[in-house]
Length: 310
Image (spheres, helix red, strand yellow):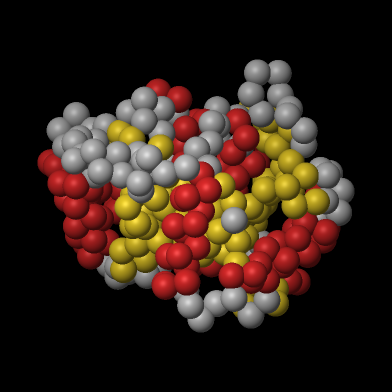
């Protein structure tokens, strides 16, 4: 693979990594995080100074730049998928949905990605439409320019996490998995059937571990009743993931789905590296924080199911 610099604009920090070609697997050549939050507000990059401190160390090391965004930068909308529809008919259907649901937006200001989802337990299918404002994408291009590179890929954190999961855990590619992103106020949760999403869910939660586990239980119950006949694994990542939360979640999954396992998603599991012992120890501690950062860089290593970009 060509060297690629990847970033994830997390809530507390922005996570940065450089991946290069390795002998058997991609090699991690650089890893770091900003000392404070970096975010986009009304088309402007806030906290730019924190990002510059990191990028000045690695700028110019890769021509390609990939960036993952938190889910709140996007709109995710579901509607029934008419399987007999052509690609053109599907795009027309999406445009009609946009006019109904997002009438206050000028369609020229939006980028729309269409993802036909895997069948639910009742074999019905949905389409996920993921919408980004183009002014956000322009800021991502500016970030790539700060690193003396070109933006070649960007996606929401949850899709990037899917890529990280499927690359690092190939044994789950033919299984049913649930991916949980634990944040301060929200949980992003997706169900995957053999590597393809079935549903995207956003669940409000609270800071207390018990409340978070209850929120995850609510979504898991819904997924097992409507979207997956069973689950093989629950992969968890994010800035609010703690040992206590993981322990309680593992017990919950054991009780709800005997035989399934819940685990901390390790973004670096199948990467090689030229980094020293200090950086390796840092990676071991932060493997669940870099999931979208590494996943967005590895997306072309994993088979995608995207149908169209409007």
